[in-house]
Every structure is written in structure tokens, then in C-alpha cells.
Image (cartoon, rainbow, N blue to C red; front, side):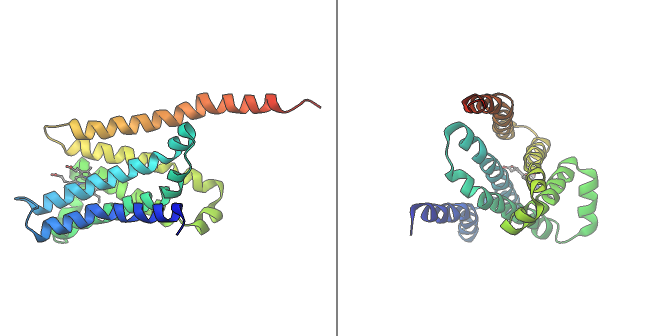
Length: 207
Ligand code: HEM
């Protein structure tokens, strides 16, 4: 097995660890006094973490020249969606017992659920169009559509900020990371890219 494939497989296994951890803690009665809340929080956290990690792949290429994170990006994004599904399913099955009326009421009346739900819905087309075939079929529109991942991460941060009642440290930390990632993107497009382009055009000898 060559190194990148082995590395990709290692990342694949690593992304399963939070789920295995939840299962192990569940089986050994270590999910605390409110296991449903604990599972909801852990799956929510991992959704947001993986989204942010996947967003770091492009700046890692622009600023450090690393290409390998780009090869992990799709897997990380799909794992973020996987944890979002688990997060939503925990809420749907364990928390609300499929009480669709209550769920609808929650989505309408509790802003943090409204945002969480909107982000979850937004992640669906991103996951569905993550294949090479869809990438080819959508062409330039694929990149435009996948910019929405920034909207999803921003929504995830607001969802968290909105639900917190006292300790804002963790959601604010996510907000800072997101701002840095957005800042890096803007910096690259506004500052670094124009310089690279003009240097390249100077390097072309005149006719
Ligand atoms: C169908 C959509 C969603 C529903 C119904 C939902 C619901 C919830 C609920 C009930 C909680 C726990 C609140 C508490 O502790 O009292 C929570 C926490 C959280 N959710 Fe969601 N959520 C949804 C989507 C998302 C998405 C898409 C993300 C990420 C992008 C996300 C990230 C989080 C985070 C980070 C937490 C807090 C974890 C912690 O306290 O450590 N959620 N969500």
C-alpha cells in the first residue's frame, strides 16, 4: 500500500473514533446522567469540527503548499454529514420519539433548532453532489454550490451560540476558527492571487 492511500485509510479510521467512543461509553454506562443529551452534544460537536477541518484543506494548500489535505476533503465532508445524520437521528428517535408535531413546533419556535435543521438540509445536496460524476456534470456550478459549505459552517456556529445558556467559550472558539478560515480565503483571493497573477504575466516575454 502506498503512503497516501494508507494515510487516507488512517484518517478514515480516525474519523470513526468519536462514534466508537460513544458506543463504548454507552455500553459501559459512561454517558452521564443524560445519555441522550450527551450523544446529541458529541455528534453535534463532531459535525462542526469535521466541517471546519474540511474547510482548512484549501488554505493549507495556499499557505503551506500542502496538497494531501485536499485529498482528504471529500471524506471529511462526508463524515461531517454522517455525524450530522447521527445528530439529527438522536434528536428524532431518542429525544422526540418521532413526534412529528413536536418536531415541527421545535423547528418553528426554537431558533437554534430552525438553524440546525436548515444547515442539515443544506448539507444534503453537498453530500449528494460530492461524487466525481456530479463534479464533472455540474462543472463550474459545482464549485459555486460547494461554497455553501461556508454557509453551513456559519449556521452550525450560530446554532451552537444560540443554544448555549451560560458558557460561550466553546462556540466562540469555533467562531474564531471559522473567521480565520474565512479570512484566509479572502486574503488569498484579494492579496496573494493578484500578486501571483501579475508575477506570472511579467514572466511571459513580450512578442
Ligand atoms: C436537524 C438538525 C439539528 C437538530 C434538530 C439539532 C439539535 C440539537 C440539540 C437538541 C442540541 C443539544 C442542545 C442541548 O445541549 O441542550 C444540539 C447541539 C449541538 N448541535 Fe445540533 N442540531 C441539528 C443540526 C446541527 C448541525 C447541522 C450542526 C453542525 C453543523 C450542529 C451542531 C451542534 C453543536 C456543535 C451542538 C452543541 C454540542 C455541545 O454542546 O457540545 N447541529 N443540536
